[in-house]
Length: 261
Image (tube, rainbow, N blue to C red; front, side, top):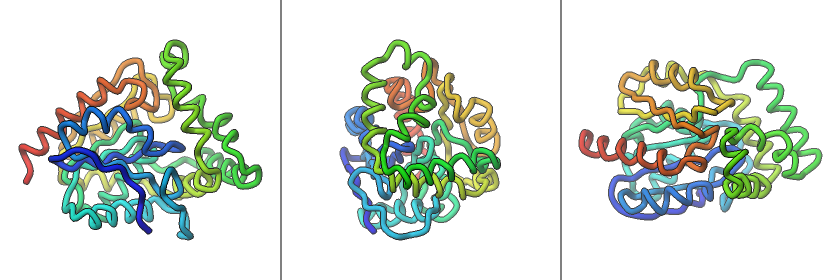
């Protein structure tokens, strides 16, 4: 199965993996800004946007294999891999399954630990509800309020409206599949300890889903990592604070390009 992906710019390949339950449309600002400096590739993970869901069992490993296949199809040996939230889980799975494809790693608003029991049960319950009701309003009710920080909710109406629209456009079947995949994901702390490339960990200061403590734990586990905390942003730092996010990522990718072949 071939992922649909937008591919802009030239230079060091930078793959950006979107959050749940959005699509590569969330990376509009990054394609415009970072695409002037790097080759920015933003795939729709399976079932979202322009990518079909297929019939594989729900798994972040399957999603990582999809990304590796996309790189192979584009004749890209290694790329800087960045992921937000669910995209971060996929990026870590890529490090586990296809480490030779990773030139640098950006983990934003995500966590390396597996879901505790209650969180896993909540994902499975939501997946069942999505399939039973077959409507994206389930995501608007249960997920949207947690995605954005208080600053965005109170003073960035356009950002809120855009994210709400992206959430509403998520196919319920794909969202249910992804919830089951995330519920089954393994702990990735050992994976991070074995990463041999530079890494950048980013977290929004107002993120309630993946906290600063989660970000610090990943930074400490990674052998060569730096942490950037972005103020006045929640779980979607690239959308809530694109200028600060893009600046941090651009500096990191530039440094990676200079230090690694």
